[in-house]
Length: 89
Image (cartoon, rainbow, N blue to C red; front, side):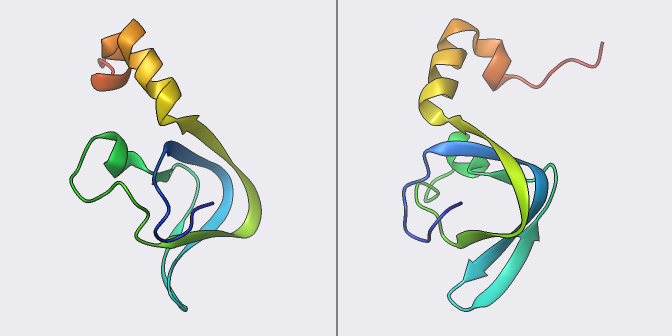
């Protein structure tokens, strides 16, 4: 899924399965359904342009991958689609 030090260039949404967040040989955390990969880089938080951890699949599953290139095109076409939270109405 992601290797420590690699450039973050996508937003990933865990659809099923289980991912392990590893820091060297230690498991730092777990990602499950609904969790995101790359969202801090997408919103532009400083120092988040590279993966700080390695993320590996522990259990077979699926993630939706939205490359930042695609998100940039989408946000230009409809800025509210990507930049604003949906309304509750």
